[in-house]
Structures are given as structure tokens and as C-alpha cells.
Image (cartoon, rainbow, N blue to C red):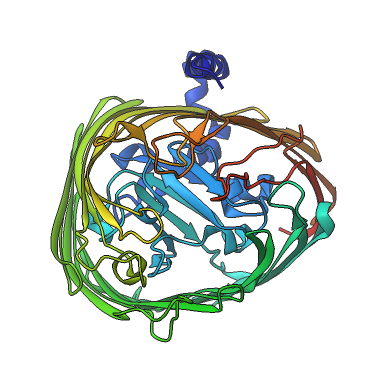
Length: 617
């Protein structure tokens, strides 16, 4: 893509939002009774940004919510497919279907962002980032993407942002089953089933899924590389008469993925697992206390290198919420233990296999309407890299009932991973933690049938951790600067659902002037869906410009930009019965977002069609 991409994208953005502006010019629609549900979808409650429920226009942060209706309409085969092109989000992968994937938020790396599942952090303590490719989207009801530094709330690694996935929660009433069966291209088979309900204050949700595919080649002239995933989820909670609540969650995904290693077939068996137990108690009418004990596991067995990498993160977190009229104070403490006991890199064991982190944090949410203030502070003490203090301050002002301007400043840090510290032959135990400062200015327009949001930000990172050439230890890069602009809008107009996002990111290594590897600087996404009685039709268009792969000669390895068109259709052919058709990469574009060390591209799948039949609500 050439330099006119941004101007064309802006023009497309303007054209897409023109009818929304016309709609907003009709104030009589604002009070229409049928807009209530639409307004709730366009201005949803968000809990990740502030540790407390706030509507999107009250969070004083840049947020995107992908609700249950969105997940069902798009029915993506993987989480990276769902996240690609969302505001401020970029995705790379080493091929399709269970191949290694990375999620970049605002130009920060996969290990500079946090993934939560119902508040439980899931990541590899060795690699640092989350294995997004191994989580089945059908296990989740919604996703919240919060962009910006959240280290003062979630600790290490929340430099670029936080993605939180929420599992379904049962509701009072008779058991409600849901079953889905489907398949399609590349001999793909996909099944899922769930049962939800509740009675007498007890709610439950049980689900399972299976995904199996022969896959596609990940390099030109190669063989198909398969993937399978079996996932299970149990969620159970009970609310007592005094409003106290207890609950448990267990989610496990396991399977095998095949990949290419220097022209040879290699396989990895994996496990992704989270488990949690929580209790919440109303101490007084204005004080609620919540205690959560959780464990997350990232396990893999690589048969090519004969390596076993099993990591566990155990966390004890205590949160207290105090209400004072329109204001809230949140205070708590956290104890976290990372371990890689029994792990072997294939080149030998790690020098250290365990570390602990202790933290205390507090946050004030103050409402002086039309002014709002959010301030937070956190202290971390890690036995591997020392003490860190992070904080944030956000100010908001309601210009009128429909427009809010916000500004914020926040700091975060990234902890060196076990690989970066101790990997035999590459690790550097003297690495410093990365530290960051971010400033942001944003404005949001929120109406009954549509919204728009714009944000301008800059993040400065000191001591960015960088891998070097083979045989050289990992180092800290002195300074990195990331600047960016995000524009997004969404609408519910009659039977139309529209959303669009335009992202510009400039992630620069200040010591060399080079763009950080594998990041596109320009991205555009447009989603449109239409209800036609028992039928629904929709599509997504994602376009991104070029990026540079990892090299040590300065942006010499360029990967071209691409545009993807995904189509979908649904048919409610009987009560509780529906069928769906999705066509991914409908124009059969060949594209790659990463490259082998030998210079070949990691190819993603071409055109793929999938059909499924669903029973249940």
C-alpha cells in the first residue's frame, strides 16, 4: 500500500459515518422507546477500565466492547480473527489455525499487554505473552478491549492495554441448552454444546467445544499443517439472601498444532487453563469486599526440540470497594507466584524457576458532574527485578449530554520474562524492567443510535527489552516512542448494524529511527450487518499497510499490506433453529504478517467457507 492509504482511509471513514451524522441531526429519535436496547449496546457497561462498572462514555479511557451479538454474528474460528483491525489493535500470525499469534495494542508487543479471563490473568511466564490462538471464541460471551496504560490496576505488562474475555453466566430459569455443529474448508469440523440456567440464587453454565482441521500450508510448496482444540468450561455461582456471593470458574483448552521447522513437520501439544474461586461480601451498605484465589497454566510439549515448557501463575487478590454518594474508592492487595518448575527449553533448564510479586493498589473514582476524576496508584515488589510504582490520572468533562472530552496520564512497566532473563545462551539476568509513560487526549460523542470516538496518544518506553542475533544476550533498548491516532464509530439504524475503526500508529525505536517489527502503521476496519426478517447478511473489510519483519539491518525485510473481505449470512429457519454461513478471505488474498528466518513468508489461509447449524437461544 502507498502513502495515500491514510487519506483514502479517512475518506472511507467519513463516508461511512455520513449517514450517522444525518441520523444524529434528528433529535426526535433520541427519545424513541425502541432505542433503549440499541443505546445499551452502543454505550455498554465496561468493568476492565476502572475495576468498576462504567458506561463506555464514563470510563475516561479508550474502550471497545465486542458483545455476544457480535461474536455470534461473526462466529470467528479464532480470537486473533476477531481482534484483527479493532481500534488500536494489530495481529500477526505464523499461519492460520492454531499457529503462533501475537496481539499488538497501540504498537506495543504481545508481552506488553494483559489478557484476562473473568479477571484471571493468562499468559506464558516464559514467553511473556498470551497464546491467543489456543482459545475458542465460542467459550466467551463478550470481550472488552481497553487501550492505554493500566499498570496501576493490573501490575506488570499492561503498557499497551488489557483485553478481558468474559465467560457466560447462567440466569434464573429452566435449563437452556445450545448445540452447534458445522464444518467446511480444509476438512474442518467444529462442534459445541452448552447448558445454562439457575434456581434459588444458584446459577450455572457448562460448555464444551471441539475444533479439528487439516489446516493449510504455512509456506509456499509446503504440506498442510493441522490443528485441533478441545475446550471445556464450568462456571457456578450462588448469591445468598444477604447479597453475599461465592463462585467458581474452570476453563481448559488442550490439543495439538503442527507447524513448519526448517522445512520439517513439527508438532506441539498444548494446554491453556484457568481456574478460580471467589467470594464477595457486603461488609456494610457502602463497603463490599471480594477475595479471589486463581491459577492459570500455559503448558506445551515441543516434539521437534524435545522441550517441555510448563508455566503456572497463582494469584491471591483482595479488592475492597467503598461507595460515598457519587464517588467510589477501590483498594486492595495482590500476591502472585510465577513458576516454571520442571520446564526444559531443549537447551537445558532455567537458572531460576520461580518468582513472587507482592502489590498494593488503590483507585479513586470521583464524580463532580460535569467533571470526573479517576486516579490510581500501585506499588509492586518483585523478587526478580525489584520495586516499581505506577500511577494514572484521568480527567473528564461533559461538554453537553452527548459529548465528553477526556485527558489522561499513566505509567506502566513490563517485567522481564523467564526466557529473557534465563534462557540458556540468550537470557540476560541483568535486564531492567521496561517502564513507560503515556499521555492521551480523547473525545466521544454518544447518542441513542450511534457513537463516535477519537483519541490521540503518545507512549514513551525506557529500557525496551530486545532479542539480539543468534548467540547474543538480550538487551535493553534505551528509548522507544509510540504515537498514534484512533477513530471509531458504531451505529444501530433500523435493521442495520455498522461499525468502523481507523488506526494510525508510529512505533519508533529512537536509537535507530526504525519502526518496531511486525507492526502495521495504518489499519482500517469496517463491519456491516443487516437483518432481513428470518435472514441476516453481513461482512467485514480489514485493510492494513506494510510492516517490517525482525531483522538486524534496520527495516530491510518488508511485508506488503493487504485487504481482507469476510462475508457471513444467517437464517432462522425454525423456532430455536438457525444456520450460518461464513466465507473468510472471500477474495482469496495471499498475505503474510510474519516471515521465517530463512526469508519465506508465513502464509495465512486463502478463501475458506464454513457452514454451521445451531439449536437454542
